[in-house]
Image (tube, rainbow, N blue to C red):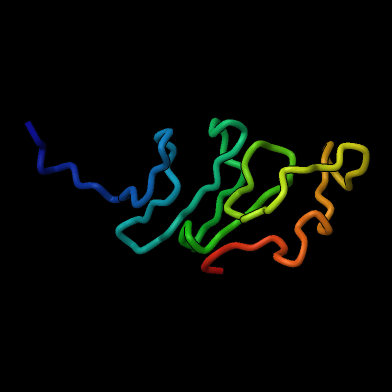
Length: 102
């Protein structure tokens, strides 16, 4: 039985195939979005005040591209500024790394 004293204050807007919340908003129009990585077990980025379709992030370390369209899966494992991998932009060719909608 539903108890009318309890009112939802946070609303889930977008969920991925693994059940991870990608975007939610509050009754006060506060928006929060997440990018999930590492086999969809952990979020790699949390963005406050932006819709999921408007964000992208990747470190090139994990298995996903964080919303970016990266035309190559090649990674450099012998050089990196931080972490263990990096990406050579010449692998992206003339297209480059893109994100639709940004």
